[in-house]
Structure formats: structure tokens, C-alpha cells
Amino acid sequence: MPRRVAWLLVALLCGCGSFEPAHDQRITPPSSYEVWWSRTEACSGLSGDFANVQWFTVPGYSFDCPTGKCVGRWEGRHKIYLAADWMHDEMVVRHEMLHDLLGHAGHPDPPFGHGCPLTWQTWTGAASAPVATTGKRLGID
Image (tube, rainbow, N blue to C red; front, side):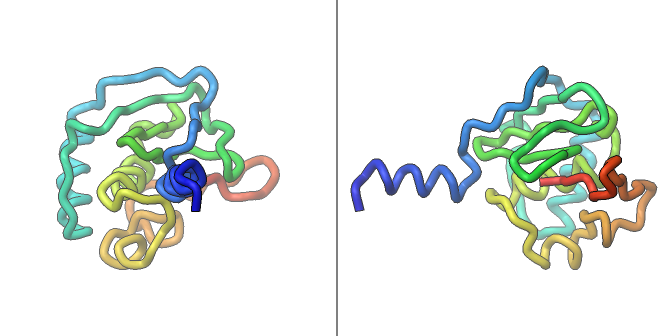
């Protein structure tokens, strides 16, 4: 396999594409994120360096992403994008943190669901499952 094709496959599989939503803004994470990071490490049995994560917000309730409309999205290279309306929602933020700890996209169960109840279907905290105006559930990738 040519080297260029091999690197393209690695980029696609690890989520290292060039996704950058419009109007995103880098932020300093609130102190609550460090507490949530510790909880996510504990429920998953994984560990990582919170300081490596780059945090971005996108104005509004959701943003366009490769899977449709999202309220949160993890990208390789420790980048997490959050719709501004959801940046204080523990489940959404921790869902993206778990992707960073795993180091890849997808929602294997465990740790998603069993172990760490960080999906719309398994979360028992205060988050509600949003539904877009089309009737489709918004994504957390």
C-alpha cells in the first residue's frame, strides 16, 4: 500500500480529519471539568492528561458535524467541540471526555453505557435527550 494512502486511512480511522465547525472559539475549561474528568477516569478505568485537551465552543444549541447536527464532538489531537448551550451539561461534556480517554470515535459498550452511563439512553442525571426539529436525536460524537 502506498505510504500516502496508509496515512489517509490512519487519519480517517483516528478522527484526525480537518473538522472545524464554523465560528468555534477556544475556551479555558471551567473548574467543574476537572472534577468531571476525574469521574470519567474512575468509571472507565482509563487515565489521561486533562491539560492536553483543547476546548472549543460553537455558538448556539447545536452545530453541523459529519454525522448531522451535534451538541458535542471529539476530534483526534485532544480537541473537544461543544455547542455553547450544552457546555455546562455534565453528560455531554463527559461523553466527549470519554472519547479523549479512549483515543477514538465510536461508542463501545463498555465503557459507554455500562461502566460510564454517558449516552442519552443510559444517563440518569439531569440531562434530557434533545430532539432536533426534524425529530432526530442530536448527536454527541
